[in-house]
Length: 356
Image (cartoon, rainbow, N blue to C red; front, side, top):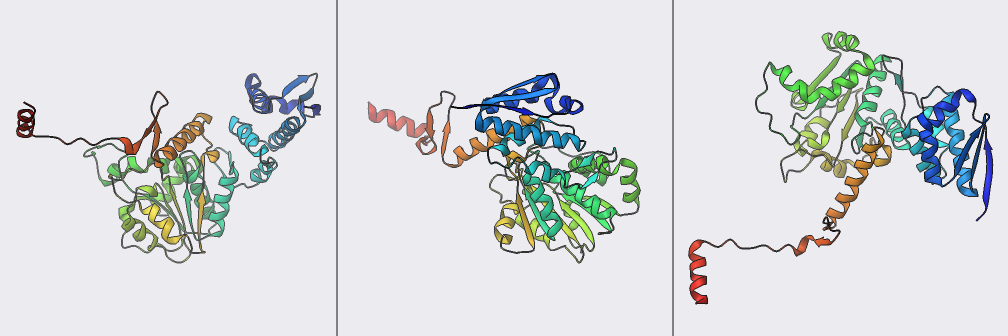
């Protein structure tokens, strides 16, 4: 085992951004790569095994470049750079950062943050219809919304249409008060949130009054032909095959469509088939339709969300194989569960007399 001591040039004005509060990002790199990072008198040294020390140096170099571009370094940036370093792809972080979509109303740049997100955005640019499939927190809806608003501002489309199936997430809410719009608004709230952040409440209301932005439940799409519009179908895993077919056949000339969904979060009745599942199987060989499958590595919310997504993926994989683990870590085969017949009182009496 050969140790390497290498120096890294990190400008003082970027050191705080790259090291994180209380050097939390440095500690993550040290723990993951089993290296030691020493910062003294403006000089940063990395000590560790040759391969790991070189990985750490490369990661710091990429983070410095991100910081110089005006980015605030987050734990997600550090974790993703580490993940890419094991595939020798850490330089891809700079390539991803160059892919600017637009700015929020507050001036914050919106960019893809992972290779999966970059591929998703590229598919939206190239294809007429794009399916974005992946777990919660991968930016499916938000990035699609940013692309829609950019296309609208650049006069590539004349209208934005946002829709999703109005279905409860495992709860029965009963009858909601108010007019029809008030009843469907709670289901469409995530779409409003993204619109307000990117376009601003005033810009949204102004364009809605003109009929240029429409947010509606999926049922409203029946019988329409949607020309020259950017259409986003969110939560597509909760559509039925008939609804999905209805939606996809509404598309007119000059339109672009993004369908987003998470196959692990279906709220359909038990046994019902998802329209998203069927669409992926039926349309996968059509060249003008793009499919982007995001994974737990593309989660850009709090790092804990990524761990939760990964844990559920492992659990569901084991469950699909028919093997789960109980609290005592003993294997329980699904096939080994016995089914017992329920006997009527008369049958029990006969059985007891026979024993006598």
